[in-house]
Image (cartoon, rainbow, N blue to C red; front, side, top):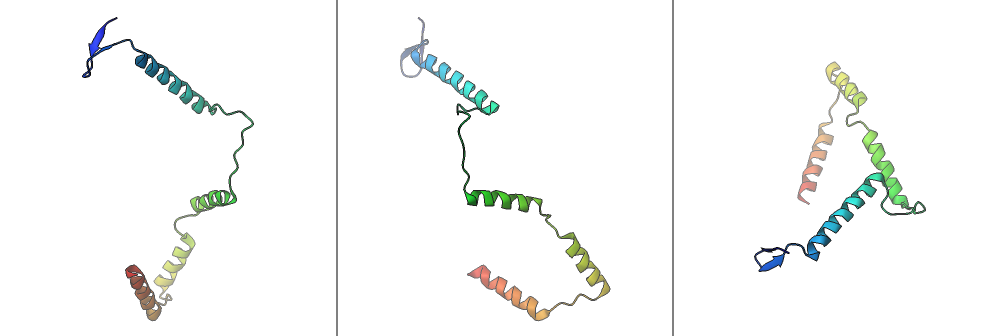
Length: 107
């Protein structure tokens, strides 16, 4: 048996620690294969129960994902109103909303 120096003195190169690490690498490799195949050692009778709130969150995520970011019909309506001169701006309402927004920034 040969020996090598490893900053802590002499240590045999063929030790149980080396064999253990090789065995753990093989076990991790086998586990990764099972996970990739969709089997993680669980029997086919295992079930997962998702809570009602989890189902609602999943549905909400689908709805948000499928909703367009821009309401193109609303944009077209506003463009037409602005270009025809019929779009009226309520100065007081705009000012009130700006002030409310500013106050909320500092609260």
